[in-house]
Length: 152
Image (cartoon, rainbow, N blue to C red; front, side, top):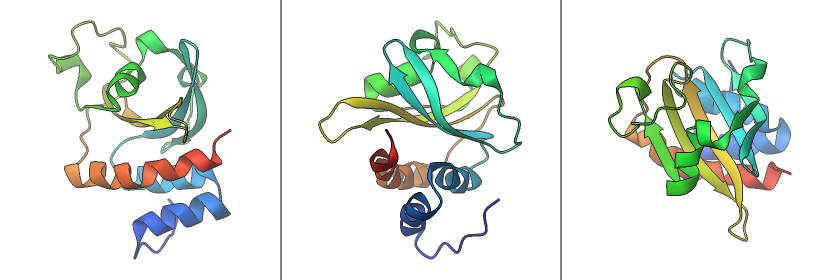
């Protein structure tokens, strides 16, 4: 993990984005959670492309790089602005479960351009059940918009 002094975590994210780039900032945000993966997925029509990703186990797999929007939790984050599930296979809100057997836990937040056009999503996800504290969600709501200036 990154050795970063965090007296002001939001400022640390801003500084990492400017000095070391998106993946370093994703790694720092990942380190604050139990999730294995943290990524930014770009919406391209009906497909989500992994634009930037951090894998805690350094085994980022190609099957995570492109996902049809209709088979992705990102569809819910895009539709509602934010989406979280700690245990997808037992979540009563996910009756269709097109992603069963793949991602089990997910936190996602819509990324939008200044003009309001969706870019894609910032996500934490894992193949195992995981949860995210409410305080961390509040923090992410504050820092995630900083990423948009660094995305093409």
